[in-house]
Length: 100
Length: 484
Image (tube, rainbow over all chains, first blue to last red; front, side):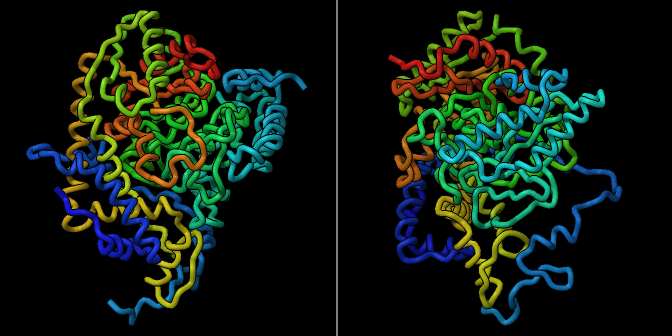
């Protein structure tokens, strides 16, 4: 059995997922996500030792192609869709000097 | 102006023969959209100029004695999570505001090359997460058969566009039922093909091991034609099956004589409305009358499908949606640092349900919970695959309801996400197994709203599945026939 989802769990998950939640959001999401996880207890409580996992419907192997140069998407067109661009590159705010 | 036929097959035949112009067909459909889409809200964008140019090109080809292709002049609506080069593609999310993709999805290239006229981009639950199209940043789509009710989702706009006569065919995507459930609720045909049969290149990813593109139409034959057009190997999707596109139209009339068709007992009991279950039994009787052998079959692990799906799909989504960080496309909310900008952008750009699924998936994958949730769900997926294998040892096809109920009212399930998720209980097992399924309209429920009957087939079993769907179609009671 898994432990019940706490408000702190939700706050941590939101931080990992880069979402800012208000106090009211935290209360609401804790309740709603708990309901879904309670339902999932039917799966979480199964004894599935020895059953292999299936992560994908197809028996995938590495898919290779010939090493031939083909036209990709147009660089200027891609850059034209970005919120901020400088010197033909995506521009972002400061990343150095942030708190870890 | 001559009467415009209602099916894609008839329209394409008339346009190819020169008896009807693509321009006339398009004008007729644009007029219908003008008259009623203000009320229905099936479209995020009607591509008037592009569609007119495409229709003119088709007419020029016919005039020059060339064949524009099997979908010549047929208006087609595209779910707004399919990339269209230079044309806004939103996933009904604010976070993609203003984005114009730099390429076409493979399916878009294929329908255009077959002569279809892409008429617009249809509304959806944001990033295809939902079962009612109420989660759209651009407002809900209404069910054309009763505008106080939802059209289902997530491909609610594509289903409603066909049901309202805005286009004879459309494309949607199905991750846990997002084509079949809205098809059922709107009273049209909807198909989820075998995983890997249709290229996902240019389909904006929700849950990559489950997502599959498929058709909507008013007739089984039109869905067969559209699926033939979009299916087939594509080197740009590494999960594309390297096999020829199936031939579906050819065998459509072969009937079901001698086919073994199984009722899935787990999906006919608790949680299924009595009128819906009754229609499914009536549909099975119709298949039996046409020569099929009907029996009962158990797929025990299907009972765990919903829980497994609502761990696996959010887990994959939390990874896929990490790319919306305000750096390369769509909106950005400025902040002093990149991490703060990422969070501010995602907080403002994503709606409630998308946030909920991202957090659920992040939790299911996080240290300490991975084995209990995501790991267990993947093992349940194995059980479901094994149970289907056993069922298909004895049966060629399986039959179930598509949705546990007919179309519900707006707001009925928005406050309780779990009650909304329960809509997908009959459709989810197919996605987990990667198998094909079709929803065929089969009369009305007790409220006079359409009921969808679902046929399931093993991987690449589309040809047999379509034969049975055609039999159901010809035996189906009127969509508004009240069950009593």
